[in-house]
Image 1 (cartoon, rainbow, N blue to C red):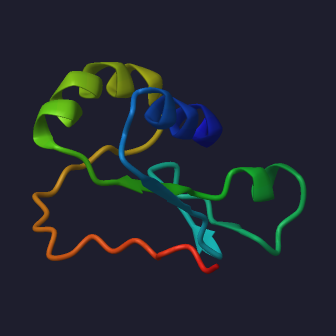
Image 2 (image 1 turned 180 degrees about the vertical axis):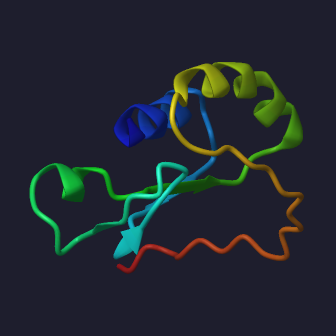
Length: 91
């Protein structure tokens, strides 16, 4: 599922996204999952995808994103960007 969400964000022109997989987690099902598990337990580790985008873009993609996410949580926060830094290519 997370690969589909990540691809969705890329294909809809989102400026950037970060995918994080924690060591352990659980959800509403109350089952603990960890990297130390095997098989299905490892595959069900929670994943967090964060992205920053203009409100207009978020509003435009949100209905499709909500349709895509069948198990999980979608939340939104206002963000103040203080600096966008890009590294100059090293010659």
